[in-house]
Length: 490
Ligand code: NDP
Image (tube, rainbow, N blue to C red; front, top):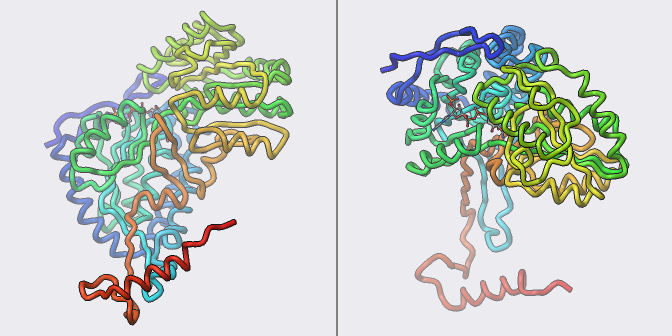
C-alpha cells in the first residue's frame, strides 16, 4: 500500500512544485506485474506496430515540448531554453530508436562457415520482458529517454523510477506515452526515494536495470541486481578532460570549454571538469577563457544547483583548489546557494579532490602541459572514463588523441557533440560504468541474442555429433580443418 507522499521542490525558490506518492515495494511489485502483461502485448505487436506507436509518442512529446520544458525548468531550475534543447535531443532519440529497431534487431541470416556449410544460421534479438529504468535529475528527459526509448523499441515494457528531485517530469513522460499508446501500460512511472528504486532492482521479474546516477549508488543497485542475476547498464559519473593542442583555434576552444563546463551549472555527467592546455597556446587560451567567463552569470546563463547536498561537495572542491592553485575566475565566494558562479583555477595539484573527484558544478581546473602527449597521459590518469574533448588544428592528431582517450566517447573541435548523434553509442568505462545506451548498441543492450542453426541436409560421411561416428569421419574433419586453418600466413 502506498500511503506516504513527498514534495518536489523548485530549487531556485524552494517552493513546492507538486506532491508525489512514495511507492513502496508492494506498489512497485504491482507495477511490474502490470508491465509483465503489457510486455507480452507490446512484443506481439512486432517491429512495425511498435514503430508506429513510438513515432506517435514522439509526436505527442514534440507537441508538448513547451509545457514539458517549463516543468523541467521548475523541477531542476535550468533555463527553459536548455530544457527545450534537452527535450529536442530526446525526441531525436525516440525517432532513431523507432526507425532502426527492426534493422538492428530483426532476424537475419549469418554465414554458417565452411564446417557448418549444411546449416542455415539465423540471428535475431528478442525482447527481455520488463526493463527497470532508474534515472537522475540533471537531464530528467534526455538521460532516462536514452534507456526508455531504446528499451521500448526493442520490444520491452518499462517501469521508470525518476530521481526524487524530478518526479513530475518522470510522471509526465509516462502520461504522454499513454496518450499515444492507451491500450496497455507499456511504460509506467513509479515515484519515491531510493527505496523505490531498490525495490525495482530487487524484483526478479525485472529482466534488466538501466541505471543512471552516481558510481556509489550504481554499486548498491548492482548488489541488489546480483540477488537475481539481473543484468544492468550503469551510466555513472565522470571527470571529463578537455585537451587544447598546440595548433588549436583557441577562441573556439575557449568558447566550447566554457559551455561544456558551465552549462546546466556543470551538472552534466559528460561536462568538462579538467582542462589540459599545451604550452604553446596556454596564454592566449587562458585570456580567451577568462574574458568569456567574466560574461557568464549563474541565475542568468545557467540555473541553480538542483540538489542542495551537492553544494557542500562543490564548496569543498573550490576551497581546496583555491588554496593550492591560482584562481583565474571566481573563488570560495562564488558559492551563494542555490547558485554557484563560474570558478576557474589553474595549477591545482593532480592529486587534489577538485582534480580527482566528480565536482558536478560550474568549476574548471586548468593545467599547462609541455605537449599533447602529456595532456593525454594526465587526461587518462583517472578512475573515471566517460567522455573527453580534443581541440586541434591537425585532424589526424586530433583523431589519434580522441581514440587514445580511455573513455567511451570523445568530441573533436566541438563539445559533447556525440550525445546529439543518435546512431553513436553512449556510455563509459571504469568508474563511469558499463553497457551502452543510444545507437545500435543501445538497442541490443535491451535485447537477448537468439541464435538458431537449422540443418538443411546431413553431410554424408560426417556424422560428427552422433555416437555412431566412425574414426574415418573424424579423420576427414581433421583433414578439412587442417586445410582451412592449418597454414601459417607469411
Ligand atoms: P544518484 O546516484 O544519487 O541517484 C540516481 C538514481 O538512483 C535516483 O533515481 C535515485 O533515487 C536512485 N537511487 C538512490 N539510491 C538507490 C538505491 N539504493 N537503489 C536503487 N535506486 C537508488 O545520482 P543523482 O541523481 O545524484 O545523479 C547524479 C549522478 O548521475 C552524477 O554522478 C552524474 O555524473 C551521473 N550521471 C551520469 C550520466 C551518464 O549517462 N553516464 C548522465 C547523467 C548523470 P533518489 O533520487 O530518489 O534518491
